[in-house]
Length: 338
Image (cartoon, rainbow, N blue to C red; front, top):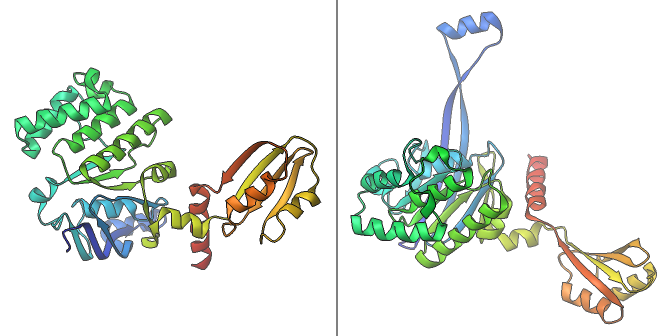
C-alpha cells in the first residue's frame, strides 16, 4: 500500500448468519429444537482508496451497509472476505497498534463515562492511549480552547446537552492526535449553530493537521460543507464514488433563476432574449416576475448577460438543485434498474 493512502479496501465483503423465525406456535416450537438460518450479505465486495488528508463522505440509506463498513474499518467486525488496510494495519488483527492512529465518534454512542466529570474521562482516555502527560496537556488545551469547553470540564457527562456532549466526544476522539478520524452521524439531533461549529472545527483540523476524515451521515449539508468526495452505497454496493461537484453536474436537473422586473413583462419577449440557448424556458409568476429554467449544459453567465443587458431588473434569485434531491434521484434510478 502506498504511504499516501490512509484507507485501502479491496473486494471487502461481510455476511451475517441470521435466524429465520417460522410462523405460528408450531413454528416457534420447531425453532426451539431445530433452528433455520439464512445468510445476509451486508457489504458486497466493495473497493476504494482514501488518500491521506482527504475528507470523504460515505452515504447511503438505512440498511445500505455504511455502519457495517465502518465497523470493519475500525476493527469491530471481521470481514468475511476481501482485503482491508487502514493506516498500514489490518484493523481486526493488530488492534493495539491500530487504535493509536485512529479516532472514532459515533453520534448515538458515547465513549465518555456518564457519571464522572468530563476532565476525568479525558484523563482515563489519556491512560488508555498511553499519551505522555506533556503531549496530553498541550493537545487538551488546544482542543478545549477551539471548542470552547472550559466551563464544561468538571460537569458530569449526563448533565451536558447533546451539543455539549458531541463537542466533548470530538475532544475524546482526538486527544491522542490520530491521523484518521471516523465520524458516524456526528451532527445527528444537533441544532444548526452547533452543527456549524462542528463543521468549522473539522475543516480546521483537516487543514492544520492533515487529519483524514471518513464521514457517515444522513445530513447532506454535512457533506456539502465538508467533503470534496462522496462514496455512495446502496444495498451493500457502491453506486457512486467521485467528486461532489461532478455528482452535481451529472445528476443535477438544472437551475432556476427568478427575475423581478421594474415593469410588466411578456413571455414572448423573454423567450426571444434566450433564443438559441438549448433547453432554456420561461414561466411567468406574475406581471413583473418571471422564472428562467436552465439545463446544466447552458452557461449561466451567458444566459444572465442576455437578460440583464436589456431588462430593468430589481432583483435576481438563483435556485440550484440541492444535494438531497440529487441523491434521491440516484437511488430512485438504481432501484428502477434493479
